[in-house]
Amino acid sequence: NDRIPMTDNCKIVFEVENLNNASPATVSRAGIIYVSQSDLGPEPVWTTWLKRRTDHAASRDVEADMIGKCFDKWIKGPELFDFLMRQIQTVMAMNDTVFMNQVLNLLDGQLNKHVEAGEILSEIAYKRVTLFAISWAFAGLCETDMRKKFNEKLFEVVTAAGDAAALPTVAEGLTIFEYVPDIEDKEKNWISWSVPDWKPPKKLNFSSLLIPTLDSVRIDFIMTIMGQIPR
Image (cartoon, rainbow, N blue to C red; front, side):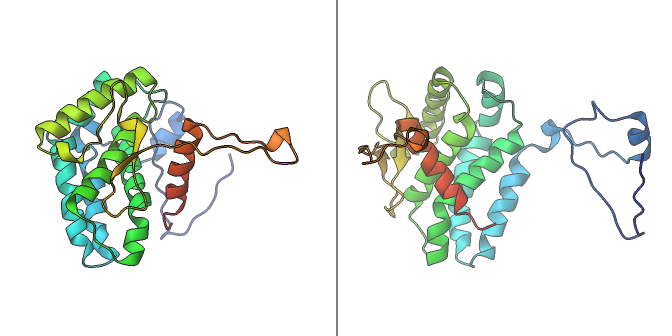
């Protein structure tokens, strides 16, 4: 029951998912602003991100325009979020704003080296990295069957938008999750994930051994590019 005195010019804003555990005393003393997800949606999140691309350099407006068109054609137009929320089951519940933030983080991670070098990529390259970001942000938390379902929907949406050339050439039985845009290639051509050969060290310490697998390679790549984002 301690009270912390604050000066008149000090304001505190708490953003919470719900007030399920708030006491009546807290509720009675707080001004509550409720914004419905259906009214707001994730569009302001990506719109703000696109507008801030020019903070890096004025030339990034070209980049923002190309990525923005992808969002309009693949997410907003076909209501991809509605499909995600209604038809796709993830292992962890998240709202659409969090999903969209993950898309933008994955884009930031893939594009960071090009921003630092002042490079503008081709339209097809931006489409490929955007597809990768949408795939892993939306269905990275899904089991295999749900990933396949999302993959089918994504291919349907992108093909209907006339952007089939940006999709990877997927072998039978595989999905977009088996491919990654080549981080070293400016055109971001799709390549298959490759697991490096593991050579046992001369001195074995079993507690520190990490044998690479397909999943560990994917996780390492995503964590590496996300860790390079300037904060």
